[in-house]
Amino acid sequence: MTDHGDLDQSLLNPTRLSIVSVLAANHWAEFSYVREAVKLSDSALSKQVSALDKLGYVQAEKGYVGKRPRTWLNLTDAGRKALSGHITALQHIAAHAGNPGPSNRPSSEE
Image (cartoon, rainbow, N blue to C red; front, side, top):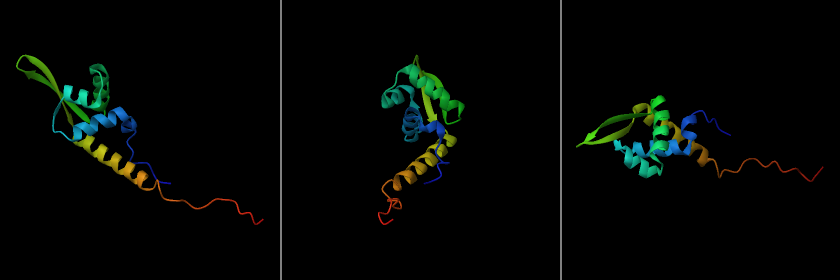
């Protein structure tokens, strides 16, 4: 069929794919915004962000707005490159989904 080498194994996880997709549309996004966008609990998002951070795909910065602590998330250049390659590979696979293959139907003339 096709070489799936450009599929990023880490982004095959739908939750991680959703997170990096949300971050791709933003320069920096507040943790709570991403949490709501991907419909995760704080702990579940934190776990996924940690995994993406270890891969170098996401960076997090902590700070304050007034006296309230905040965390902002950003998709790194490596994360953008991984997402782009992953989407291209998925599009390539999807483009071939409707293509008929050779007929392997046995011939009745034997």
